[in-house]
Length: 445
Image 1 (cartoon, rainbow, N blue to C red):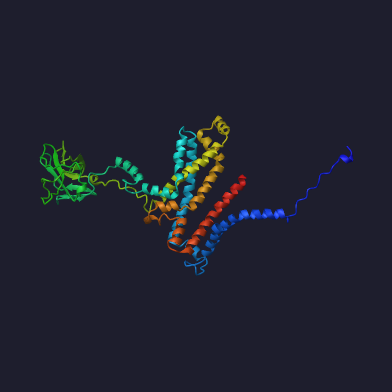
Image 2: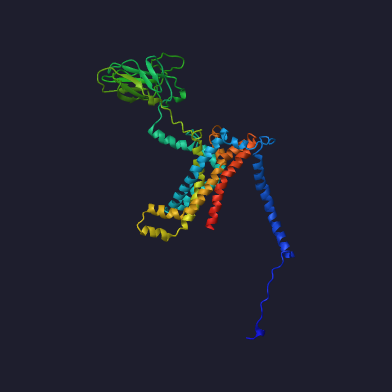
């Protein structure tokens, strides 16, 4: 090889920064970024800065009040209630949704109809939170005939504590004492074979009279027994109290009892369609008959899910119903990525299914679980529409959260100073969670 065959490679020199091509590239880049920057400034930066500035001014915006609006956050009843409720949401909802999603994700691997199960659980995500709130507001209605939840609760309740034949009534004669709450007792002593118990009731609305009621009949005394009749002691056009007359009906289903001289209940009976009843095989002596208070037990009236005491748990249940599907799908994706040989190795070493779940599956899913948990914290801090749609006007103050308090204060009460302060306070609460999320992203990268 001689010197002539050796050729030096040409030295490449970068074009100067002020070359016409570089300027063109900067111009094109700026032209593409400009719309996004403008929109970002108009829709995000300017409102955020203006909200912070506005929070230091009065309701009308004409006077600078310093931090008075921020002091009012902790002295105004509606806002303090919202802060307490948001604390409950943050403490309960993210953990519950993550736990339920984890259980559902594990279950879907064990059942053959997992696709149908996933579809059913994830389906609420297809509708808006406001629409979900409307659904649950109807389901939570107190009337068992309208609210689905109270209909289910009522069916169980009535199976163990059935409603009485009547919901209200009054004694028709002075010979009867008591009322619906404690029962109605006949004052006159009764003797087997000689006495007939006449238990007349009045004050019964016509629509509450049993549909199978028939003309009341006064029975005759029976040997060794005490007979009686319980009837609606009211005759249209007038009548004699305490006397069974034509046009007065018996009260079927009424629970009647008999007590001895010591006050001990010795027998019970149920009135027939014509109101008659009978106590047989009685020992000689005197007894007192009466109508049991169970006769006047009112039908199940429903749980007040939308009342002031249960409104926040009711909304939380509705929220979990919507978001459990999201958690299930995300965690199921993470579960599918777990190496199966790791799980099989744990089972081979003698670990039970619970030990495999607790010491292998959950630790390997920790990054996915943290994603779901942090996402739910951010979501519940700014929860708004489902609270507005589920809670009726009468209990909205008890279900108040920060986002709803900000909206009502600023746009209903027209106090934009305090409303802006609530918005800034909510933003400050979200910042630590956002920083935690950013830190997690950097650690994963």
